[in-house]
Length: 321
Image 1 (cartoon, rainbow, N blue to C red):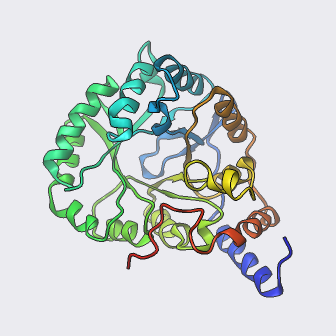
Image 2 (tube, rainbow, N blue to C red; image 1 turned 90 degrees about the horizontal axis):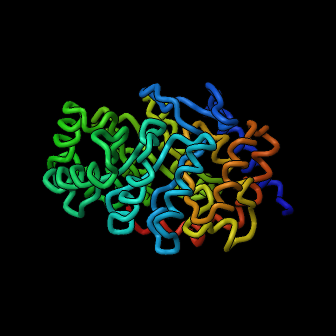
């Protein structure tokens, strides 16, 4: 792509801004060649690649295939597993529960999420008990409020009892750490932080296009790092399926994921539905090396033409104030 002088300086400034955030965190260890990083103030070691839970419950996979994918990922060094109460009407959690048998539960950092439209404590409590049953465990490592996506939701989350339920669950040993997620507007993340609850983690979009348009990385990531929150990156390939790779056809999966892994995040969530795709993602994570500024500039330059307008980030809500 040929850049004009103004665009070149813009890309260079973005690359410099990324560098100023600290770049890729130090690898604390490797397990079966999989890099591990520290999950913020939890001090928990987590794999650079996190296995997405939504794909595990899709009808394209049989139960045995879903279990095999999860166990292969774990055997290859992945210890962070993502899920949510609402994924595939509970099938994702149920199949993850099956995969956790035979000693696999002891090998992983298990995360799931709660979501109700009312953002009420009663609903969250009911979902927690059901998630524990589905996942066949007596303790969830990380329980997050799922998909904070509307202007009223931070206030509701703080005022309608969810935080009381989450804190009580942690005190009772049913969960260990607490966080929240979202990908519609960065200001909702900032409000969730600034209202003052002592979150352990947050999950947000981290990708090369985000830097150009309604950027979570520019606004939310510095605040998270300032508070030593564990940052979980998602949407590294864009919308589902991977918009930047499959629709825009402008970046490779390796470029997208290495860009996200080069950011100051603890882990990058990626969903897979086939063993071939899992092995590709494992190879990408295991081969990661920190990018230099020129490599970052190149990826940002490729992403720039598809950034404006949100076509390839359909989960963002530009019309919301």
